[in-house]
Image (spheres, one colour):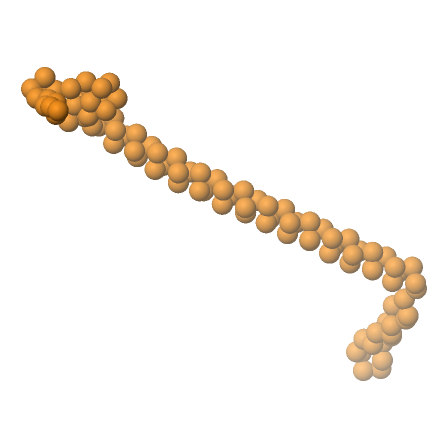
Amino acid sequence: MKTKRNPLGHIRFIYRRSSPLTKCVVLVAIVLSTLALIALRIGIQAQQGQQQKLQEQAAQLEYENYQLTRNIAELGTVESVKRIATLELGLVDPDSQFFTPSN
């Protein structure tokens, strides 16, 4: 690119046609840049999907933690002891009366 000064002091640019090699280099640079941007976009989308899965997993674990904390708090109560004894161990309250149907 040449520059010439005119008598008024302004700079005037004179453009030359670029060589085919320069055009090829610019084209290759544009194509590689586009491919790099596409690869980055795909990587970002994959990371966003992974982040969403991890957030869902964290929410599930927080809920389970809440349930376990609540269960631990209830363990010492009389109601929970009776519930565990009847449902999990098959025990019965000694004050209960059973009736059997007669034929």
